[in-house]
Image (cartoon, rainbow, N blue to C red):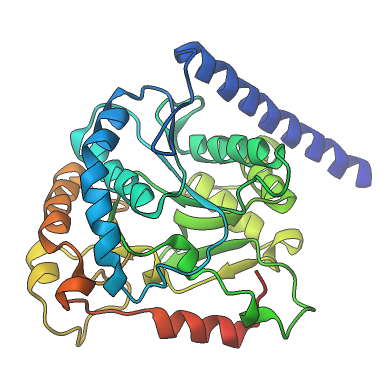
Length: 339
């Protein structure tokens, strides 16, 4: 039995390492200048449109930093070293504009952003191959220089509150200081009506995360008989429920950083009350909006991009309908989790 588990682990690890090597090789083959870094934005693949977008956003980023003084999102708190990761394939303009909101967000907070534009394996499994490559690159650095957390966001998300940092959703050091018996917290995820939605999540830069992501990548190869209705998302959910991972995973409320859209953008713009509104539906003051499972996704994203630019900073204008500051603090105080 033990030898069987060892063989499965070896096979899974071999697959993961081969994918990372493939990623590195393809990245260099696309252009010897990659990864291309400017404004702390690193692109793995074609980068021209990213560079142009970042150059055009400099003035807007400076303005937003000034307006964020009115935000309750602990904008000036000393955050752990964190980077955002996302992917954008193809030439779809709405998707590129959606990723541009994350470029602007990273510039406002002066935090790194990694954008993956060159697929190396099939479909959604690219996500975990990319995450694994970044994890391994960071862990090769001295501890004082490496990132502490990664924030993954799918390419069909649009930032609405540029003042909010993903680090805001992490527990503070003091919130778990009284409970040192609890395992270290390594992943923040959320569920929708179908179970885990891994379109947006936080992952610690740690050996634990390498093991989780490598297991996800290898899952369909060493467990081919297991049905995965939602591809790599199902594999991730199954693994996070297993004994070796579950104690370091925390499911947080979906609306914290993965709110879903409502059908009419006018509701977001004009709503005065949240009475009878489902908790997971986006409203002014939320960090971002996500559009999973839509057939006409590009046109919907385009509409919400226009809405985002029209609303601007809801905290500065006093029109925000949700402030999570107290809710997040209470959640972590009750949980006793340690960061």
